Image (cartoon, rainbow over all chains, first blue to last red; front, side, top):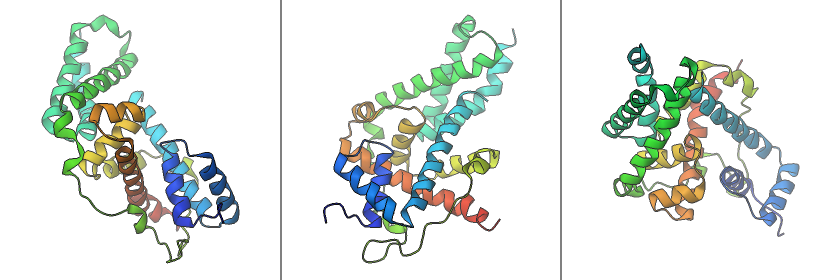
Length: 64
Length: 186
C-alpha cells in the first residue's frame, strides 16, 4: 500500500519534519501511521519535548 | 563606569556558547573578545544592565557567523565520523516496526523547569562530533535557515539534512540516557 510506512520510516519522517516541510504524500502517510501505531506517538512526543527544550534553551541563553 | 566588571561577568557565559558553536577554543576566544570590543566601543548602544546580555548575545551571534564564513574551508564536514544511521540505535525489528516501545519521557515542563536538565542538554550538544555540532548549532542556536547554512558552509541540502537528522537522533539518545531514562521510575 502506498500509504503504509514502517515505524522506522515514520521515525525518519518525524525527525526530518523538524528541519523541512515534508511532501504531502509523506504527511498523509505519517498521519495514518501515527493514528494506527502505539509506539510512534511516544517517539513523536519525545521529539516534541526536544523541540520545546531547544526553544527554551535559546531563550534562556538570550535573556536569563 | 563599571562596564568592565559587567563584561567580565558575561565573558565565560559567552565563551560557552561560542565554543559550542565553533568547537575551536581559539576561534571562540576571538569571537568573544571582538564582542567585548564592540561593547566597549559603543557603551551607549545598550540601555540598561538587563539589555546588556541580550545585546552581547546578539553581537556574538553575528561574530560567530562571520567566523564560520571565514573558516568555511576548515569547518566543512570532512573531519566527521562516517558512521551509520543513528536510527539503527533505536530498537527496530526486522520488519521495521519498533521492537520495544520508546520510553515515555513524562511531562516536558518538569525537565524544562530544571537547570540541571539544560546542563545535560549542553553536555549532549558538546558530545556531538564537531562538524555535526556546528551545523546543529547553526540551526538551533543561531536560528539560521537551511539555505543560509548550506551557503555559509558550502553544503548540499542533502548533506545538511543528513547531519541534522544524525545530530537530532544522537541528542535524543543522549538525553534519554542521561536524563529521561533516570526519571521514568519516579
